[in-house]
Image (tube, rainbow, N blue to C red; front, top):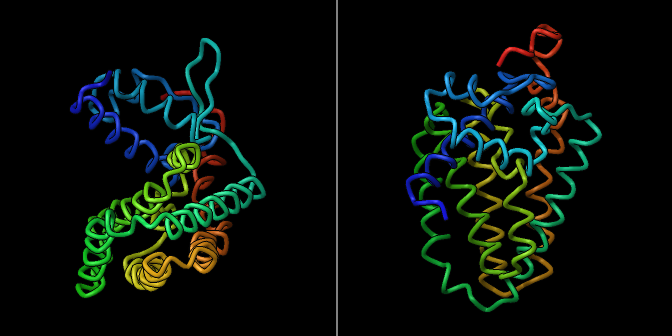
Length: 239
């Protein structure tokens, strides 16, 4: 069993590697080695190994026999399909949460998430630090809802979805980020109200609509992911 500190280290390294992939800093097709990544992130090889396994589950990297991992290449159509599947699953999670009758057990956590984002919107600060705080808070919000629903298979599937990490915020500038905070917060408050009122169908459709937002920006995310690949070509076999 992993200790709390090792699990925290793995989660931090996973987050950092996911960021590098989603920003195109690690390009599609780029070969990844534990030694190279450990040197780049200034960490030991163990959390790198665990993080790469997690990212393979998220379909962001691919394992290669005797060669470690590569950043996965996927098409814009595959990206759109991933977003659509995630939206359907998040909608199901919201419906189960609304029908569970367990809102009071998660009310404090969900309310805190709402309050944190309200503060970010009030500050009108779209800096990288604020974006990271939003991403973490957004994830907490969605995790609480899926936990409320209680479907363990659904929880595991959503936990492996890279689009839960708010990839849009990797391509937004500061002003766009602030505007996105407000749009997302409006959706979150609407979803929260439907769950509070135990309106399963309304909760499902509100969440699906919310989770489909990245679909409109799929090409932008795709271009961001592939921004370095053409320039790097076969030189990507170095890390």
